[in-house]
Amino acid sequence: MRRVKTISSWAVTLLVVLNMCFPALAFADDALGDANTPAVTSTSSSSEGSSAASDVTVSSENDAAIIDGVAFGLSAFSRAQKGSNRDIGEAYAGYSYYSANETGYLGLIATTDYVVVYVPPAVAQTAGFDVSSEKDKQSLRHLFIALDEATASGGALLSDDMTWYFTEDPIYKVGTVEFRFDQELKNGQYYASIIGEDGTDVTASTGSGLVSPTHADFAQLLPSDQVGIAQAPTGLEAFGQFLTTLDWSPLWITLKTTLTAIVFIFILGLAAAYFILHLPPRAQDIFDSIFTIPMVLPPTVCGFILLWLCGKNTPFGQFFIDIGFPLIFSWPATVIAAVIVAFPLMYRSARGAFENLEPNMLDAARTLGWSNARIFFKLMLPLSWSSIAAGTVLSFARALGEFGATLFLAGNYLGITRTIPIAIYFEWMNGNNEIAWFWTFIIIVFSFIVILFINLWSSHTTKYRRGSAE
Image (cartoon, rainbow, N blue to C red; front, top):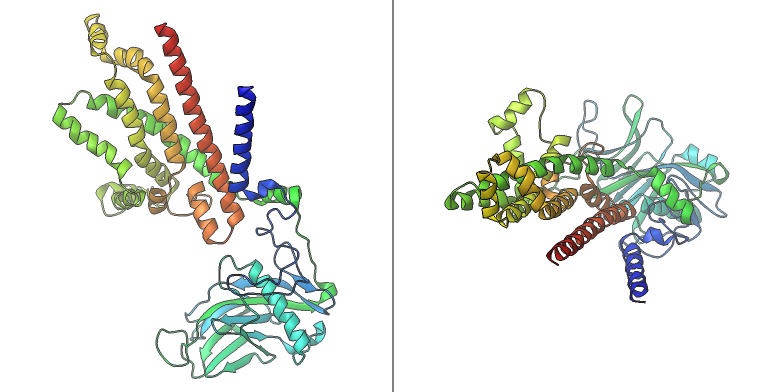
């Protein structure tokens, strides 16, 4: 009866953890709705005050939208989070956003105070859009709001409460600021830009008539029957699509890094623990502090020190640069970071196990003519294996979750140095909460397995020792 209650308790606990850590595993009808654009965008205001008509239907790829009963829709939508304030070609063209390789795209530039929307006259006529119609402008505004919100990734959002300007002129002035659309600033490349009417930079930190652009949107205006809308999957289908479209490289990089690092950690930890036993007490204290300090230092401090040591500032780092094998911002850097931060756990476990061995037993082995190597492999390792195994597993878990030192030394390069902890941070920063939750769940599962292994191993070792004692 007690076993049944225990199993039920574990099951309930596991379900609670799954629902907290990865809501998509609940397999509700709206599973992963934030990762893949919801088919219908709600009118409820977000934290930024955005609102969109409840009858706006957005494609699963976040690139098209229509409204029931409206003659036009948007397709080929894209959002530019940042523009460029550098010269394009041979002259300063203002703060510019790249739009497309062809003319005829709708352009929207948003600032902190207002929004300017450019609708090419020929495109408006073909799609059935009337720039003088308040109803048409409201519908276009809601289409832009819905698509913009779906692709914002944590950026600034459009809102019905903002001031909206609609124009069919490619150059539109708000005060002393010119908004220029459909400008071919390079051969075959069209831009939208913000510039002062006198050709000055109006996004500078000082001056008059300044504006603060937040982002730009671009899309094609088409008749609604020509806008292709791919509906977002739901439930199990959505979860399956999530898994098939997910970039799995952080998992493979994390496993490759951790498995490689644990080999070095295991060998170096045992060697350091064995080495320190043969030192005088004062020297032991010094070396023990050196071996243990990565465990108490913040990971960012370890990462900064490693970055300095492995860079061109030192002969060590310069040597690897000269032979064409730079250590920093490369996959080996992830291994180095993991080894440094996880090594103390292995070292401390092994040293504690070696110090608890009976010295008289080791001396007796020496009187029988055993070499130090034979004593180490035949006596010390087998008798200390329980603690060494626990230290190995803990070191593996620490290397698996390393973030700060890895980010400092290896950076965040997709498919090269992006481990799961780094992926969680940057996916969350980019607004991809479902992916961040998924990787969080994976890390929790790995950690649970590690802790369970340690508990089972300790229980097995305790029973074995009790049996031997009896």
